[in-house]
Image (cartoon, rainbow, N blue to C red; front, side, top):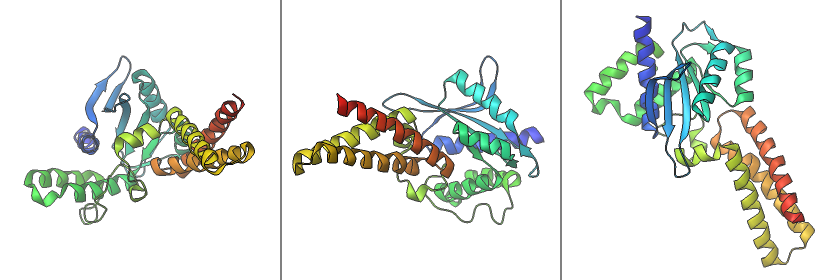
Length: 254
């Protein structure tokens, strides 16, 4: 019975990912691990890989560090850029802190219910009888029938702040890559400041200040659009800003 419930959880998350544009492989095996879901998002610049662990536990159980580290090793083996762990329970504080540092996505019971609500609205369940029957089955695992599917936005379901992030999954996936983000910030800052310098006749020092200001705005602004966790936004924004600042200084000296 427990295995059956977990399979429903895996099937549901796989369906959500497929709806977001992922190619999904369930129960994907590596040489040392079995990954519940391995998702690949094709882009023009290459595939973005995501590994997902689905843990169907009692709501009082807290997922610990062992699960996070195991999935981290699986992600390294598959060269996946993102680790997502979904549970019907909760996470320990140590696991949450570790996930922030490692840029992992954790979805607890409340987050799972919200995803189910929004996904139900998006696919218009009443129009298809088979889909209705399937997702009624999910209610047994994820939450009370009276609350799980009756509210929520029709926007994308993989983000809790979708209303502030009207980006396609491909663009969002690219901008979540720190290297691509740094290159984007440096290029935009340099080009905009150079155009302003030429158009307004700004001095070199003023143009340099403008570049820094633009880089700061983009370094924190773009992560705000593509990340869900406030701590991740601050950490990534700081890394991108100082890396971009260093590259801009090098370009100015050259």
